Amino acid sequence: MYYFNPDTIMTNGPKMSFDQKISVLQEQLANVDAVVIGAGSGLSTAAGYTYSGERFEKYFADFGRKYGFRDMYSGGFYPYQTMEEFWGYWCRNIWINRYAQIPSDLYERLLALVRDKDYFVLTTNVDHCFQRSGFDKKRLFYTQGDYGLFQSSSPGKAARNKTYDNYEVIRRMILSEGYQIGKNEELIVPKDTAIRMTVPSDLVPVCPDDGKLMTTNLRCDDSFVEDEGWHQAALRYQDFLRRHERLRVLYLELGVGMNTPVIIKFVFHRLTRENPRAFYACVNQGEAYFPDDIASRSVAINADAGRVLSALIP
Image (cartoon, rainbow, N blue to C red; front, side):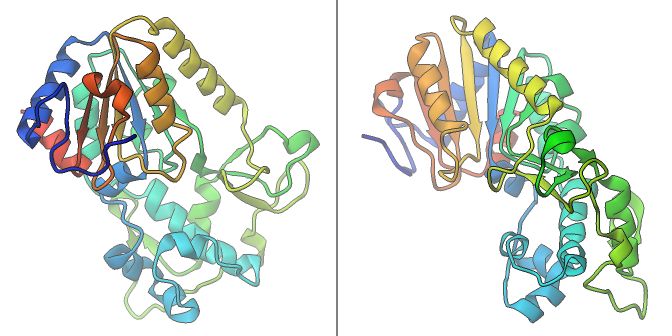
């Protein structure tokens, strides 16, 4: 049995207000030996990375009018007829969600909370916000890929375990559509300029190792490339867990839903269950809960991560 979506949730017996839950979390942060952050899409949404509404209309209104989708996620899966249009869409998606300035300082505030602690970050997000905000690269494990990398669309042999930085190619694609790139990598539409929805054929990326078309390094199917950096990060994560398995550990879950619970959520439940000195905190707007059997060592905060971080930091 699980407790789902309460405004107040049972922790060690009594019902708790938002402020009381924040006090519990502050106490845990002050006294644990280590913090393992599990970050999902809700954290980046709280930081301003919305995939619909105003941001979608600003950058993808032309694609929306032509194809009828209303969010970036749907646009990423649309079956474009040409690679020129595929990359016409994806170069904007990658640029605004990976290379342009992060919309808020939420990740920097999170770093301020754990900077002086022994921490590790496990995330399914692909926007690289942790590293761009100053988190130690060797304390990060991006399980699902990186908007900043290409891979072969059909990796094999020489390209089987390789990814490729895409900043320069994506930048050239963006400029070819008619945009200018301003301060903080912002996309600017010059006056009297019609933005194109396609890139030139000579900018369609081809893998230098196997000659196949390139694609994004995002875990969508079994062709996803786990390169050397991915495997090194996985080993560092497992080593961190091993070294702290009997210590006081806070498993801090931020914005993790039920799309891929086996990567973060269910693992954090298990690790808390196995270590009687561990504590589990779930922060998620509309989907905060914990299992019955770790209720005495858990807190669930049904709120936006930005609100919670603001409350945690005086």
